[in-house]
Length: 400
Image (cartoon, rainbow, N blue to C red; front, side, top):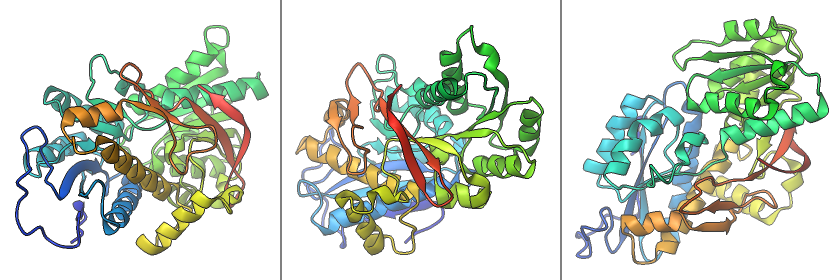
């Protein structure tokens, strides 16, 4: 049964007749027929657009389980709603560990939510794997070895945006809207990394917002008044859509750079207004399903076929659906690499020994590399712009 509060993917189409005799203290959440994994996602609240990621991942695991699972085990993903609220994340994470008895956490979303449970999970030595936050604070294997990031770093994207701005318009005046947490502040750091002291004056104004704010209209008005001709938007989907719409409605026409975390056409650009979103620039590490460049790509065809069969009614062009598909693929790969040793120690070892690992939808030249001393998963990306129908790649592969 699906509820707003929790989305639970059954690992099999039938109930297990008896508990496994192979359950071991060193591998909680594991039986001879099942492995149970947990995550928290905002299915409700100000970042509820990200719920599509969880829905797509659950559908992917349903496909895998119908084909026999991994190494003889079905995968149960217990995906709970935390509403993008750190106190709720703490509550739901404790439920996953202490009540659901999951083996480890995978793909939990949000910078502040993941920070709220990082100490708890590291103290208990429970893997917090491939989290959906690009905040650089999480790439800290020395102090938090059990927390492993899974997406492109925000600070790196901020650097790439700024390098492009400086390279194409060296006299630009930059305005930044950012969420007031480590997610948003990483963009401010990335911009300053590139500008340095010599060009620091190019950043004419930066303003933050709180996730509890009803809108960011007043912030956008203030940023416009700065005289900026370049606008960097480091905001989650709801606020990113508001910023794009308000910018257009004010008659302000800056070059716009949008965090990839809000790159969904259905969840962000359409609510903002397709015409109002034309020309927006973001980065990509995954092939975008809306881009006709990949129409004949075999991996894209498999993804579209998956959506049609396992997630009917979902727009395959939704970047968040593609992200969920990729997260499911990564989880299956990790479990497969573990073989029969599903201890938390070995799961962490596999997650921190990824060399040139390529997801099916990764762009050519983009791979995941995570080592015990470097938890930064992505080091390359491409720029892309929205043409009113789809994202279109341009330029060369960039390094951060």
